[in-house]
Length: 69
Image (cartoon, rainbow, N blue to C red; front, side):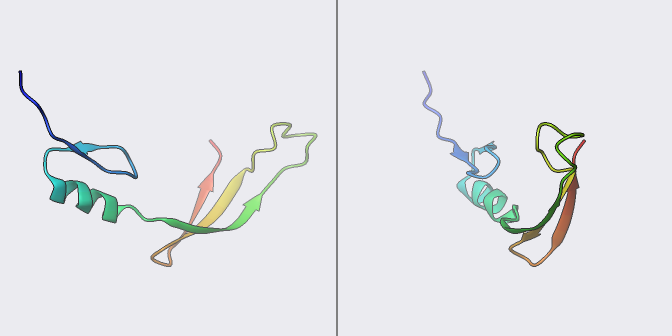
């Protein structure tokens, strides 16, 4: 029987044989710093309370809008 040693990215969960590649993967992911805005519909048309879109800011200063699918 072989014992395997793997390294896992703590952000996305991908496993690697090489520790360096796992660290590169972790550092490649942008971290959300804050939510800038969220647009909601009235309760009468969106009873689940989930926003239609959200704008977030990442640790590199970029801002991205995510839209409900």
